[in-house]
Image (cartoon, rainbow, N blue to C red):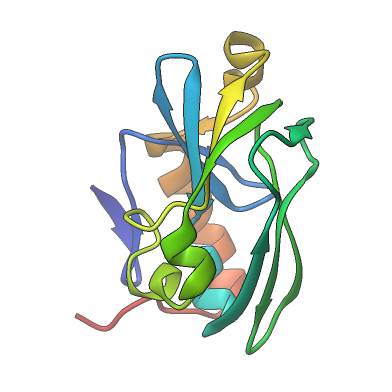
Length: 145
């Protein structure tokens, strides 16, 4: 696992560095969640409203609305598809994302254009390198270990 200033960037995931979400591919389904740097920047997440199962989302569309100590706004989709599952545990207790951003995913999508849209995302190694600059710009540390 790659990391910087306590922020974890697992090497086996894809990352959308514009929207600060990660993607784990499972066949034609993708699991999506907030990155560790994003949750650290946002602060304690106090509310999340996730779109309903069956909702069609285009890349860049809103998957959820997030409210935290320092952020209020959308969580955007890194790929196009239909929401096939939402994480009810996270919906009920959004601070779980702060505890472990990679364990507590937000939605699962049946992807429409997976092969072409994955090419738009950064791999773990690429993301780890780029997040060094982002983490420094944001002035954050994820966890003091």
